[in-house]
Length: 637
Image 1: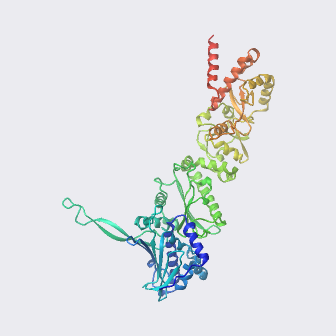
Image 2: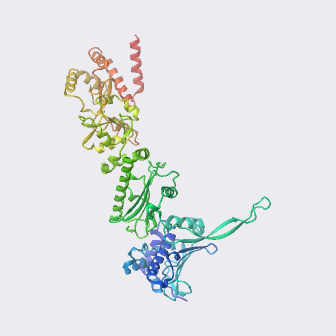
Image 3: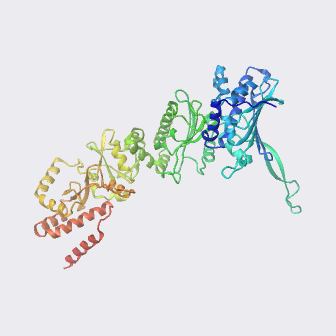
């Protein structure tokens, strides 16, 4: 009878913690055991490079999975280096003591071997699903095999045993199913196959499993003989072994890149762009990034989760690592594989270290360069991308108080008053008039509605191009930009357009002083709805329009009004501008001299008319309708 040895006190506590806390998903156990088996093979393969007695070529190495449903057992077998009794006691008896790490430290030339089992805790994830674990192992070059057995924190035994070949066999006796956990799922072929595909698809050695298949029995299924089926067992390799991202770009076709994307990220359309990255130096990683053609249904909702798949030496560590992507490029899908990341003890999460930040910064620059290249060389394709994700880039400029504006500003597109085509800010600047001081813009619900705004008339007459902002975030992004290539942005609704000649300004100023009392009366009649009324320098054909003073524009007021819980009731400081060259101005002057009550009503009608032109809501539709009816009746008389 073998003696039961106890885990060291600290190991016992760590084991209990790990079984119950460290790993968030029980299915991780298979990834850990396969990774350990791969590490063991790596060690022996490294030795075989200089030791011909190993007798195995690289193609002879592999990992075998077996399922014994009758006995509720899973078996993982490798033909790697195996362990001695001392190594069993040290590596499996002292938790967080890693044989892989020791091997790498002792063999300087093995630094290029991808060994990820450097914490010495992965093996113990077995106890999340198994009530008992047996490890049968024989070290390469040794004549003796050993059997390590444990039921968890109670301790372990080590005995000599029979084993013909070197390597390790791990046998997991699964726990019984409970209401909360169905451990028997791990005995299903489809489950094992899916876990290997998910976590260990790119382990460099074949992972094999005997799969049960049903076939039509030969000679049956004809008109004379009914169909009969028979079962056969076929050994299948579950993993693809060679990651597509580690292949040379010249080896891959566009169809292969796109096919991988559609299969991996469950999209039925080809991506609009793929980016294959290989870097060395301060940020060493392989990456395969994709820009989807269409935004996911939940993309602009709080339910969307950004992130890239993260691999370490071909083993998937995280399904969505959000830290690798900035929010403004959150639409990018793909993966990153790096050997240089500092993983935490469970390998499920990433430590927030310098290396991660370097990779993230490198990815951001790569994505920006690819988008810029697409904009310059494939304009039609870029505009297709813009329709799907342009809104996200504009949010990116606004978020973070403009911290990312220098990265994103030359990727922006806007419709304009010229040709109604999408243009970049560079293109706008290139065709500005020599005397033009500002980049003019107008905001509204649609290009057609903006194009009809009274405030655009004088800017168009000057031959200046106007950016048309049709999305709620646009003005916020523009204000965050402040300027582009030394040219400041100015709304066509701004109080001062800075567009008039000194003579025009002087003429309006004199006329305003002569009618000062009229404007004060109109302002008083509108009872706080406007900051002031004044003569307009921008109107040509319309009688009135609204402009604004301060940072909050008319379009921003509409945006704030649509937000939930708009407790602040943010309002623009409105100015009612009246066209001095319109017949209505003479009517108002006459009413001021002869009928101030009617002037008050006219002021309300003109203000409401200006609101309607802006697409803003009317505070009192019934009052407006009544005033219009009164005018119509009085005119009939």
